[in-house]
Image (cartoon, rainbow, N blue to C red; front, side, top):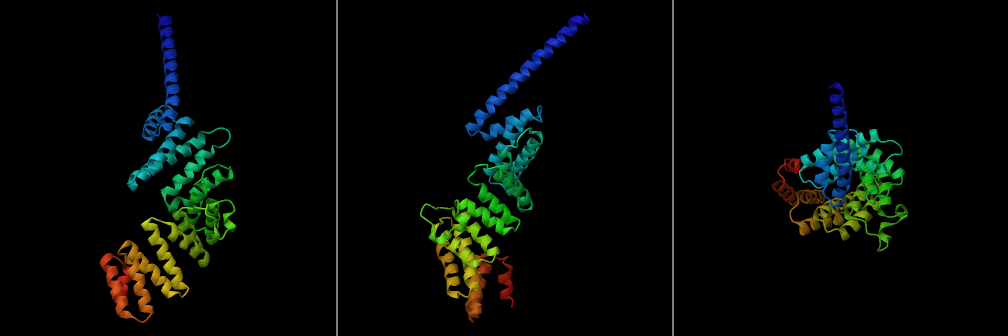
Length: 301
């Protein structure tokens, strides 16, 4: 009887093992297919389910992390974004611990972007992993741009500009943006980001060149407003009052009412000795944005 029971246990164990191995094999075939189809939600759910029984499986951890990142960038709600970003980071950091042999540069690349989306407090980790991917010559078109944004977030503007230059084109760091060839077509957000770094480096003329190009090419109203506000600030600091005024008026003409544009016009009129027009602009500012502290301070003077 004992021999028979032992034989049955061994047989059932062998059957279980074979069945488990087949199921895991099927999953490792199914997951890449789902990924190719763009079914990131199914990849995320299925890999999470399998990780409950195989928590240290490198393949499952990487696909779970990659799918979590894809789901994060597709969200609108900030809570949902951070939920998926946290899942991505947890899974990929664990995958790095399980990895044997050379590092998988894809993991470093996605981790770097995930830490960037996690917020400025994690920008140093974004730089760490993105630099690891770059030093390994990982080919990703947006890697330099994310690296530039991450460096800017930790106030390392010199390295930020260097990374952004790589995002523009090979050799772009030595190129005058006003003399760029027609084939050079950086995004408006990239141009704005570069300009902000140059402003932080107190290189106003270079920042102005990128902002002018951004204004000329952008069709995004939010980016246009940000670029014109920064241009107005640069013109104002250089003493070009009419240039600054033109930027603020353009914001109002192109996009309607804007609290900051009205406030800055008020500052210009006050400095020009026209307090009546200045106060009118500050009152418009407060009507648009009742919480605009600088405008309320001006009106209480």
